[in-house]
Image (cartoon, rainbow, N blue to C red):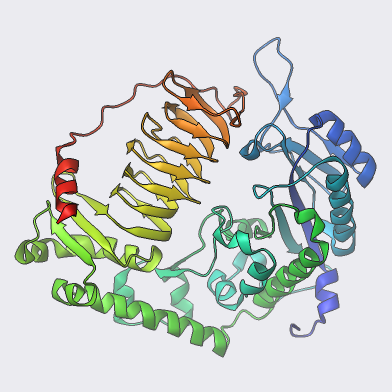
Length: 474
């Protein structure tokens, strides 16, 4: 792939690459830093956090310490437990970055190891003296990048990363309003009317563009240090794709065609939810009710309150079957017997659902959650959460967490925990923690404040749930 006025070699050699290596080792962090410093011929520092007066400082997690081409930093990475670490370099020229990657991989093979929880993040910018793209990285057109970028080649080499909750696919373009489809705008105005990969945990972290670089998060998995050829090929793909977007900012015909195809598919959804009658005809396996009442006239009177939520469920979560109830007392939707993939769902009551994606401020009852981020879900009952990141969520008796990363400084943990990591959280007397679960001690600074007991709120009156379960049987 060539970019206007520049050869591939010129583009690659103009790239500045910062690397974040996640790995495991049984060696203490101080010795790791010394061994890596010797291996890489760089200074490797360990940021420290000041604890209570009289106690020794301890290694800091996600520190603000800046790195450079000569000064790297080594930090604990508690997402994988006490034996997981992260080495972070500063920006390096392309040739030197490849040498550093090889050297770190050799070190990991000798003194450490990687698992499916480990990844390698590639931060890319360009030397402004060597190369001058048409637009600044800060002005990157994210929509164009998403339309032009080929993820399929990456997933061929790193197939398990396609389901990673920390590196979600960027190929999900959703207009921020269903009224968008009344008349599709032109290229100049469309950018502000769609939601595209707008947070950290995508395969590409576009939030870094404002700082003049992009973070690519696709690469990782068990034994990544042995996949040098595939990783270098993927890094080249990152660099060339990135430069192509900032050096050719106009939409190509192919990109326009891809966008048109997406809009045509989504427009069919919009046409289906313009009226309850049309929706009912086109989505026979999705049953709607208001306060558990399945009356067409009642549903029609509340239909305008449901269209936004239904549009989101259909376009972002792949909903094809389930039961959706609108609770007028709480002004809240309840979804039962549904299967959602790559979802981004907020403020729902979810009953007997299978879920994968981002789940925020929801109530979960008798659900199965996998490969997800579960955040601030206060009420959780009889639910099994696996291979997920759980933060500030009500993990009470009757629930189970399998191989999860739990960061729960505002909620007591009283459920079963099998394997995984408890980063933060007060473990209650009713908790059942497996021997293989890695419990990390809180460090007590402003970044990781020690967990304190909190008053657990009483769950809502269960009558509505019992009624909903009866409704679900019909």
